[in-house]
Image (cartoon, rainbow, N blue to C red):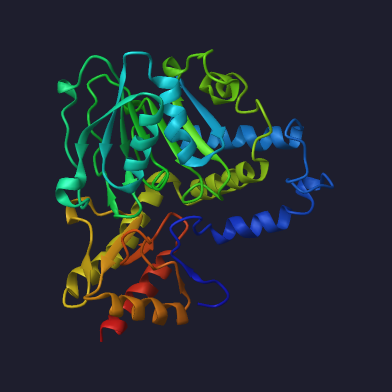
Length: 358
């Protein structure tokens, strides 16, 4: 292991070592300014450059069309659970939700507080191990948007193909798999993501929104309007400067790795490394998610009983493996293998799993 832990935390999660080292070098004296990036004004030329580069890199890496705005907000994905319906749902309209697990359920629960909301499909019938289908052609005309959660960190399930929305704005919470794979942004009305898994540290939330969905909703407090942040390039109030700076460094790192296509290939290899052990050692391990919907970000699995799982966690911790305990709501085991988790860490974990079984 050396000095670095095998970090499989679900979030805040691993950051690229190269990014941490660069941030360390620039921490005290950012670009000879005599100040840390945490000390500079958000109106300064030093920060202007960081802000613009982060937005530009996102547009480049995700091939974001010109009719979309890239916003840096605060409040995490949980803040967007409320801000979305507040901005997008008009009187007599309904927000439609596909429930795939805990985070989708939380998004729906918040929407119910501020607008008419409906469940159009639920994974409860398959015990949250797969993605339920829906047919957009059957949706009522008053549907404001269709909301999905692209990857459920707790259950370890992930959309492999995104659904057709029949002209209804498709909204996706991509907090746990943004920039982990290639996607067609033009299929979505809104994409949002907390940064603390694939983008950088916690503290900043990315929102990619199609311009025709941005309205200046005067009935809302100014700070809760997408129009406010779009018109001011996310500088209406003091942004989380350091978090956005770190996002910029992570985006530069992704570009250096060969872009999203190269990252996607590595992520598939990492996931397969662990799923192979689960599939070939069925007397010891069994995967939680249905194979067709297994996440490449969160590998969830169980052992024969909780006593064995507890022993697995204790022994793995002694070997430097961090964050393998499943979410408190479901138990079990989970390895979160976001972009910054090296392939070598997954190999080390697979080796430990085999040895533990023996």
